Image (cartoon, rainbow, N blue to C red; front, side, top):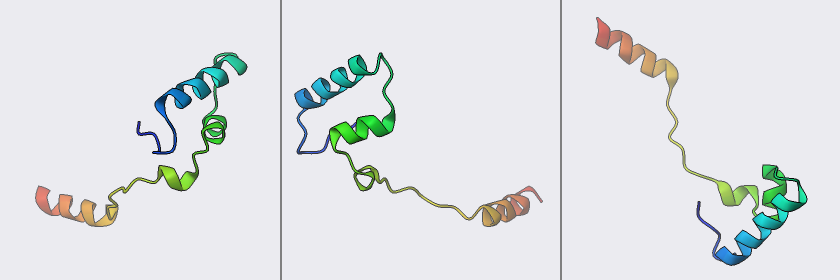
Length: 64
């Protein structure tokens, strides 16, 4: 996990410990993000996309 540059590791640990204690050992992802100030756009990752139909066609051709 990478922390945003504006959030120190110590502050992150403090927030997580506080949330866990407050919520009785369970912390929802949305609550954690809200407390840390992490926006959805901060969590974007590049994911390769595949055309499933094309892959199926190639596999059928390969198996012939």
